[in-house]
Image (cartoon, rainbow, N blue to C red):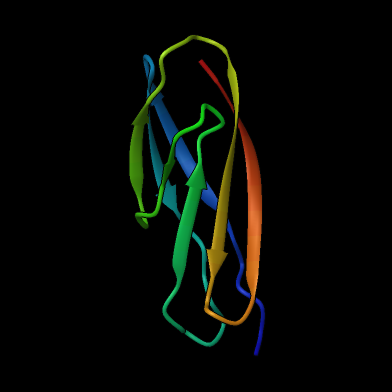
Length: 79
């Protein structure tokens, strides 16, 4: 089983951030997603939007799994 490749992009509008998952699986297996927004909120959608309470820096984590392997990626979002 080849490992998944976890990645995402994001767009900030005020305190609302739209996250676009760009993760891939070399074997085209079905993927699951776990977003951690760094403010005690999470989501399991493939793509998601989140509104933050405060203007500050957040570390966003996306963990992607194909049921056999998982990978995670972290990115900094500054509001």
